[in-house]
Structures are given as structure tokens and as C-alpha cells.
Length: 84
Image (cartoon, rainbow, N blue to C red; front, side, top):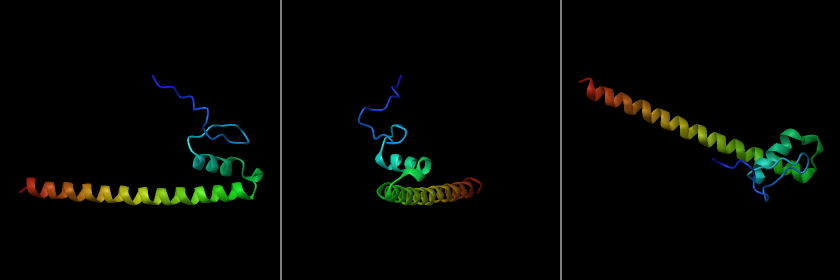
């Protein structure tokens, strides 16, 4: 059984009090849920976190595509060897 309660020192949203596992996720939350209430520093943190998240997603997609291509050609070669 796991305990799903966040640690006491978890970063919390200063507007709604919701806890987050990292500063980056908190910045993304604030930008998506409370954008009209943010000051310039908080908006800059949101934009940085948004850009970093986009880069991570792009990297993940490329790695996933590479794995799928490798699996496809691996099964193709296996079929060519077994079918002969």
C-alpha cells in the first residue's frame, strides 16, 4: 500500500495551494491555470518550463520512432530468416 500524500516541503501553487513534485510542474500549472494572475517572473518561468517540456516531448517522440523502426526491421529480418 502506497502513501499518496505529498511531502510537506513539496512546491505548492501560491494561488490554489496544490502540491507538485517539482518546480517545473508547478510553473506549468500556474501558467495553464492562473496565467492572468502571474507577474513577469512567474510568466518567464512558465515559458521556460513550457519550452523545456516541448523539447522533452520532441526527444521522446524521436526515440519512440527509432524503437518502432528498429522493431519493424528486426521482425522483418527475422521473418526473412525463418521463412527461407
